[in-house]
Every structure is written in structure tokens, then in C-alpha cells.
Length: 532
Image 1 (cartoon, rainbow, N blue to C red):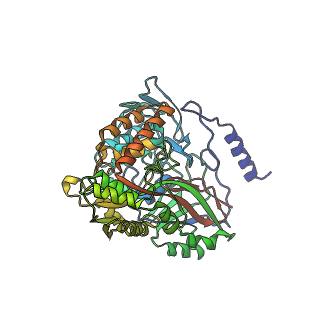
Image 2 (cartoon, rainbow, N blue to C red; image 1 turned 135 degrees about the vertical axis):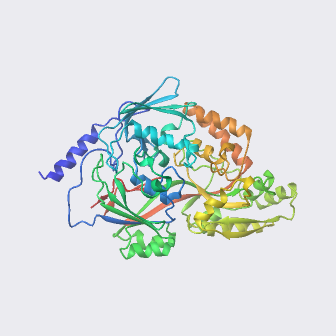
Image 3 (spheres, rainbow, N blue to C red; image 1 turned 30 degrees about the horizontal axis):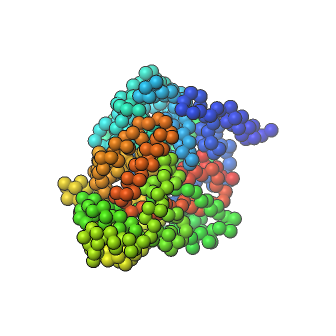
């Protein structure tokens, strides 16, 4: 029996010995393909073990506690481990924590930590690293601090036991810790400046930074001292390529190994080509037009409702998106836990739109401006142009301004008192934790008005806030679902958004690659990638 075969048998036997967990206790079985325990890949000098992966946006930061978009998030999932991690179906599994339990009042979570883990800087992983990582969220520099604001204290009980104490019971704490912002960094690395952390990240994941090429590319190399099973790829270069035609040509020419963001027409040349794998997956990213509810006429709910009626979402899906999307039925996607279907609320009805506009005092329509990125999201500018065309039929005339992504993020997050001049904008928000409470908190609560959070509509509704708070603290799944149905109905009726469609994911890559996970947030994970 070869050493390689024996090793694979031992890994398989070890996987069978893992036991599934509910909310803590024993360690659950890791899903197939997850790099969770033991083993190193057998050496094969003839195998090409380096990969080139294209990303569709600039790489704005490598600091996991800073908002940086999908490309930054993708890098973070390769570099960092977390206390727990979530698979593509939102199931939560142990990672740096082996098991956990809750107190009777549900305010204290005790995590038992994995021993023998080393960070990329050679430091041993202990409870102090969890404490210091989460403590950084109390500083003004961490733009994702709103996600962890319910954490009251973190106590290092001993080197391998840590206790997280929350202000109120938090039903989605595990999901939040599994999110990209839950990345654990070494205490030593956190003593550096924010700029140094962003450019030289130190995690405990299976890949570490080798080279940073500004916002254009990042090269990662396999971390040979990783505590878990090592992926086959020894090096991955992530490179920003904005044009879909360029990405396609790079893959065909062998200059790239993995690409996303293709059109239906582009896919035709790969579908029946045995050199490539075409992989489809669900997304939970909802494309939408956001309204600045503080600016007239969008401060009038009738105007916002009218615009929702005036847009034919089915036509967008079939025309602009060529079927690579589904019509949005709420402000959250169907794959998000807590989703409630309100798809019939704004069926295409331009006559109803005109009635509401007249009732709101705009019988002849009005003019305004909408901003959009170009290439940040698949068919973003094209979608906006199609929406603009449809709105003209009810008398609404919109000028379109295209803005580069980095400037775009800054522009929409200006505070009202600081002169925010955005009226309408296009975004595609996902639920990174896989459940609706996170999305509601991040995007619709008054405490998260920009620039603190991402309520860039400056939406406020006291009834929504009260029910949302109940959903956030309720540990009974059925009751929480009922609360979320109520909050989504309020949001749909108030219409701070015009939900358009939910993206479908599609990736094309070399056929000899396997065990690549497409997370619903459109961040591929290569932590268990194999090369045949």
C-alpha cells in the first residue's frame, strides 16, 4: 500500500469519527472538502500547483475588520481562521474553537480552543488572541464594529478557554463569528498600525501573504505549518480584472485558472468543453436601487412605492441578466435564513405607479440622478440603464452617473449633515452571516445610519426597530421567523429599496481543480482545493 493511499485512508477514518453538534458540545463532522484536520498533500513535482484567480473588483484592504468589498472578503477567507466557520449552506462548524456551550441566561458563550495552532508570524494561538482581536472592534478604526457591538466583554479564562459575554441574548452570534469579520489575528500583529495590518495581515489560515501589488493583485502562498489539512495549491495569485472579455480570454489562454462574472453568451464556449468546469451556485446577494429617504421626492413613501411598481423585474432578469438571476421577493434572498416571500407586493403595474405619483403630488413625474458602479457587480450599469428606461414611461427622468468603486463607497457613506448629495444608487447587498437579522441590523436600523453602518437610505421606523430587536434576541427559531416576517413586510411597504433581483453564481475553472466552495456571498473558498 502506498504512503499516499494510507494517508487518505487515515484522513477518511478520522472524518468518520467526528460527531455532528447542535449548539456546542462535541465537534461536528466537517463537510466534504473542508480542510479541517490532519495530513499534508503528497508531493508531485509534475503537477502545476500554482493558481491564478481573477476578481472583479479592486482589492481595497486585507484588514478583515474593515469593509472592503467582495475581493477583500475572498482574500480574508483564505488567510484567516475563525472560532467557527460556515459552509455554503450556512451550517456552522468548529474551526479555532473545538466546542462551546451557553449559559442558562444565554448571555455567556464559553469556547474551548484548539491547541497547537500557530499564526503566520510564528506566535502560538491562545485565548488572548481572541480577546485582543475582538477588543479592536471597540476602536474607531474597525468599520465593522457594528457587527460586534452586542459583545460586552471577552474573558480569557485560561490559555485555551475564552468566554464571550453579550449585552443581550444574541441568536446569530455563531453566524457573526463565522463571518469574514470574525477573523482571528495574532495579538503581536495587532500592536501595529492600521495601515500595517491592512497591508501585512497575520492570520492562522491555510494561506499567508507573499506579495501585495497595491489594489491590483495579491499573491498568497500555502502556510506549511497550518494546523489542518493542506490544500493542493501552493500559491494563488488573485488579480483584479474588470472586463469580462479579458477574464474569458485569460482563462482560454491559460493565463487564469478560475474566473467569475461571465455572461450567458460567454458560458456557451465552456459548457461542453472538457477542459473546464462550469459551476453554478445560489447567491444571497440582492441587487437593488436604494433611495435617500431624507431627500425629496424620495422622502415620500408613495413615490418609492410607485417606482417599485414601475419596474418590470422579470424583464430585467430575462433581458439584462440573461436568466442569471431570479426576481427578488423581499429585501433578503430566498437562500437567507428568515426569508419571507413578498414577491407579489410590487408586481409590474405602471398604471398603479402613475396613480401613486399623482397622489404624492407628482402627476407629471420628476427628474433626479442615480449613481452606479460599472463592473463591480455583474451587469450593474446595464441594469441601471434598463431601470432608467422603464421609469421614463411613468414620467420619471433620471440622469446616470458612473463612479469608480472606491469613490462610490466613500460617496454613499457620507453623513447627511456632512452634505450627502446622493439621491438614488445601485447596490448588491448579501447576507454574509446567512441569516436575516444581520442584514436588517446592518442596513435598516437607525443606529447604523452611514457613516457608522450601511443604512445609506437613512431609513428610520420605530415599529421596525422594536420588532427587529425582538428577532435579534429571540432564541426560538419559529418565533424569530415570525418576527422576521413582520420586519420584512414593514420594509417592503416602506420601500427604502427597490429590490430587483437575486444573483445566480457561476464560476468557470480548470477541469482538474476540485473542492472549491462558492459561498452564497460570492466569495470562493480555496482552502481545500485539490488538483487532480
